[in-house]
Image (cartoon, rainbow, N blue to C red; front, side):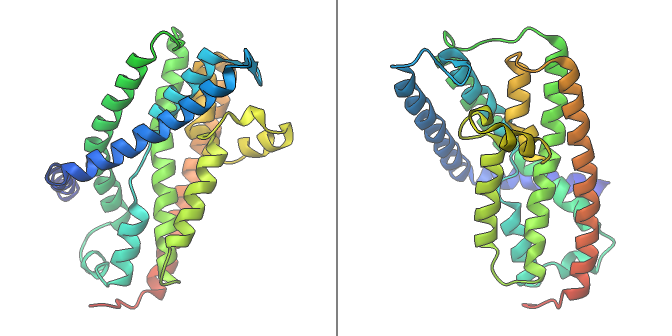
Length: 265
């Protein structure tokens, strides 16, 4: 356990060293959120309601949704893992009594805890700026479910990142795959707009996948568009997906090691 705690501390030090890098990502997130707000503000100038959403509900959807999305972000572990595989650095972990999956989890916690602090402060600032449009939820049960979904969603995103990185066992470049997975997951999570604006069959399809529970679903629960019972059901499905992704991660890791040739050492 000590070596994993040390990994977290080392990543804290690295993050503090590269503060400009963290700031750059946060500025990018800020403009991404503001662009959505500007677009929807323009749309609502001629409409009082769109797809069952009022303007305050849409602003709340964007700000609360992105806060949840940033709290579950993992910051590019696909590239970290693929580089370690392709350059032979992975042997530093496979030749020692070191669980690589646990190492990535510890590395993720260390990296995310500093970046998420900045992301949280940025979103709180945005929420304060648009406070007169924000709908505040007073349901304690909803908050408990949402917090649980954020925690589970964090590890779901992490294992998806790890699985994407493991593709490097079989191919040289994963940048195209990473881009596609990132775009696909954001779209199915509802990052760009509420999925309820799409045909019902697509929404039902999305509920069978893990992405929707990292953005759209908890925000719908926050807005009161889903009941507590539906929230618990969604959390249960999310936990099942977490177990499945963890099992798949362990399985792909074992298969990948059989393919691994320590290239670059």
